[in-house]
Amino acid sequence: MASVEGSGFQIGMVGSLALSVASSVSIVICNKALMSSLGFPYATTLTSWHLMVTFCTLHVAQRFHLFEPKLIDAKTVVLFGILNGTSIGFLNLCLGFNSVGFYQMTKLAIIPFTVLLETIFLKKKFSKSIKFSLLVLLFGVGIASVTDLNLNLVGSILSFLAIATTCVGQIMTNTIQKRLKVSSTQLLYQSSPFQAAILFATGPSVDRLLTKRSVFAYNYSFMVLVCWLINISCIPTLTDYLGFLSLPCSTSKKMLTHCVKFFLKVFIVLSCLIAVSVNFSTFLVIGTTSPVTYQVLGHVKTCLILSFGYIILHDPFTARNIMGILTAVFGMGLYSYFSVQESKKKSANDSLPISQMAQKETVALLASKNQDKDHNETKRSNGIPAASKDSFE
Picture 1 (cartoon, rainbow, N blue to C red):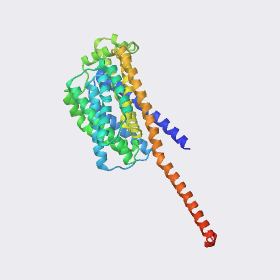
Picture 2 (picture 1 turned 90 degrees about the vertical axis):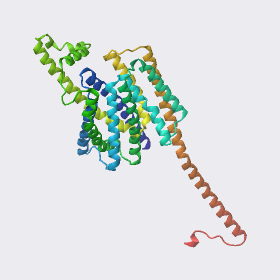
Picture 3 (picture 1 turned 90 degrees about the horizontal axis):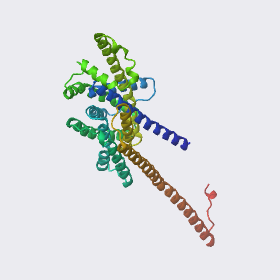
Picture 4 (picture 1 turned 135 degrees about the vertical axis):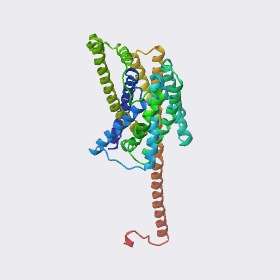
């Protein structure tokens, strides 16, 4: 029975990791299309929509009894929601103001910072083997992404803030689930309204400050449409269907505007739906594993993002990128191997005192029986009859 439960847990773990990778890669590509190709740079406002859709989805799931909600201390939920909402907002802003490669490098830079915080404040120990595997992983990703690093002042500041808030938020995600004994779904359901509220309230102002444009007054100009056409012109299968481009200028411009607005709505809805999976899988993976393990998944996302960037966006992709990706994969393999070995060693050490205790109890019991037997034989030798158990009944 225990083996069946263990195998079921492992299958669920693999499923949550796969969902995290697939959803994260998908939302990066979708959001990059929204911000770069469709000219929708309002990352913070978009994130608030993500969280609102996530809460509504979980509320519907709760009404259908797909999970049981659990009340959590209001102060804990509010502070956690504000912190997590802020970190998500910074990550989205980082994506909007940096290249995809630098965005992934920012997420992977969370690993050493998380290790540092857990070592200092939680007294958690990381073996030399784990540290070495993480170093190999980060080195490989650095090699793979070095040609994709486009630095700018605003993007660098946002990256630093994203690293700091995300580390603390993910450590709290793991700690709250374990100490309060709540599931990832229960914690996400309780905290997502506060995350959405903080971003919904500050999103338009922050986006206006950073982009110099208002999300409420957003409208397409002819130049935006031209830029969008240039971006999609590299996809022949799509432009073949835009036969209306041969129509008169006014008619073509009007139909083109409706077409772009349609794609904008589709990508916004798609981004919100993917965000539900991203939020759910993030809480699930961090709760069942650890913040560092969750961040190690970033190397898979980085490799996939760089590959998609090369195939779809024609980003530079050289032998150095391939070498870096292979090195990162090797580092992930080392981390997985050392983590499994240390987990087995820890389980063996935890079960050792119990077996020793049982052995000591057995030895004590046998010693007691031998002592009673010797005592009875001594009485017989002295002419005193030994009292049996039946004589007292």
